Image (cartoon, rainbow, N blue to C red):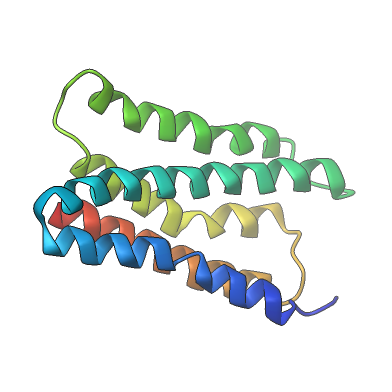
Length: 144
């Protein structure tokens, strides 16, 4: 198996920066803080949906994947949409939804592990990125 490229690692870690910046804006408060809450939810939801796309692609490309992979692949988008719904109907948002979304992102490498197909170095990077983004998302949800 090939090891992950430096570009994959560098760009992966760069993907945590938007959430880190959002956390700083939420801590600062004011109008920028509210916007940062909404943006942090949107970013986390996009990344979670992207992970579903990765799983879908693995299901198509890998010679042997679990039969449940396609169902697991569509769940992130559906969950993100459901967690967005309270805001759309004027309910309190996005604190609890950010906490749940962050926890799901942090746990998402468990799906990768269950699929059983990954290049060398993938799981270590996935855990770091998922715990980083998931942890920042949970923190924003608890603070906001």
